[in-house]
Amino acid sequence: MPEETSLRPIWSGTITFGLVNVPVNLFPAVQSHGVHLRTLDEDGTPLRRRYYCPADEAQVEGEEIVRGYEIEKDQFIVIEDEELEALEPEKSRDIDLRRFVDADQIRPYFFERPYFLAPAGKSNKAYRLLARVMQDEQKAGVATFVMRDKEYLVAILSENGILRAETLRFADEVRKPEDIGLPERQSANAKQVAGIEKAIKKVSQKSLSREELRDEAAEKLMKLVEAKFKKKKDVIRAEPTAEADEEFVDLMALLKKSISQAA
Amino acid sequence: MSTTTTQVRARAIWKGVIQFENVELPVKLYSAVQDRTVHFRLLHKKDRQPVKQMMVNPDTGEEVPKERIRKGAEVEPGVFVLLNDEELNEAEPESSRTITIERFVPPEAISHQWFDRPYYLGPDGDDDQDYWNFVEALEKQGREGVARWVMRNKNYAGALRLEQGHLMLIALRFSEEVVLAEDLEAPQGRELEKSELTMARQLIGAMVDKFEPEEFRDEFRDKVLKMVQDKAKGKKLKLVKPKKKASQESLAGALEASLAAVRKRSHA
Image 1 (cartoon, each protein chain N blue to C red):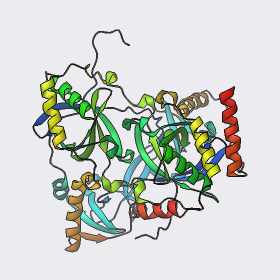
Image 2: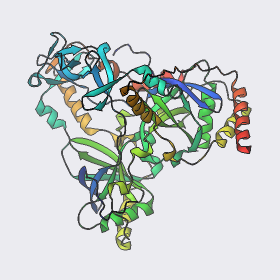
Image 3: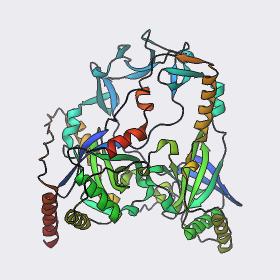
Image 4: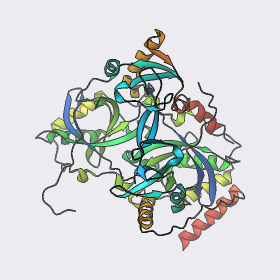
């Protein structure tokens, strides 16, 4: 295991509601899982992904790479980091909550990706206050903010005393049934509806256990890999890959440290 | 509303059959999202050529052609178990057209954190009657189905639910991928003061409204596109640096001032 003792935040900034500032760090709540499949040379050397310029037929290092927008075919406008940041300086730093809604009003298909928010700065009091009130009232704060090259619509939710940011899709990113051309509703056959209802009831339960959301295909491959490893079959030692830094961390343990032990 | 008489239906990305107990319902699957992100390309600074990616052997610095590339599982950092195509294929789930409903649960049983990607399901076949029977039954029961299926050699779990009068299947993340809030402990500290809790409640209460997704626009996207146009015309850009945030004197003071501002606004 690499000696990774703390998690680097994806974004750091301030949640504001009214004139109250809550400094926070944003951490991922999801991680890749299963077998970490890598590409190797035939002798087992792990390969690295490199950029190259087809014009020079040469490899290009990170600092020689810039971001470009294709304005016409093969015509690019170069965009610098500072230029993007300057477009929305406040939104790059603040999640300004001006609107709170009933948490259950946000339809499930808006939700894109969950992140945890940990208190940053000297005191966690404002964080705890916001988390407590939002949880008691079952409210979600909605705002937009800018992270890296992109603006996000985000719902801030509170559960178990912890603030979570769920990125949401913008309204123009979700389709309506009529956009797809789904047919309009027709009347149903009461007898057949009753039959389906009976079948639904038969397989109904109150809750969903995590066990039911396991990825069996990933587990199957993992078992095969472990069996080969035990038998020392096709096992190769080489340099750890760059991805290993990220993928061999215990996200839950690191989150526990970042959130519960913050200030 | 469009006045044309023929409605063009979007292309289905997959077809399957919902199954549980004695129920069978053939459906077509459509993406419920459309990407509107502004996409950038990575360029070589010197000549503004889009760069490409290749796989390089770090020992030799040379590109490795496809036929020489092998797959290996990194079991510990720096320890690899080689896998051949046969082994990899065998681990893939068997292809099938069945969307198995494992069970139905109340909607609140599925945490937001699981939700990944939504799909609409439309009727498949000449007769839509079975589809509408199913919609009505699900509506009356007020439940969601927990579904499993295999699409393009990949395992999926999903929530089958109603959305705007139609069936929707939302792909769920697998349990191994998600850390839930219940797994973690809340930050601790001295007990919060009653007066601060009351003020915070009032402040948030004053900002409660309905969720109207259309009110939130990706303005950044528009600004990026405008900047690109300006730069193309050779306009000089003014760079604004984010201002440093003034530190907050006291939490109680900030709450009081916020409440006063909110009240003034609502009386105006």
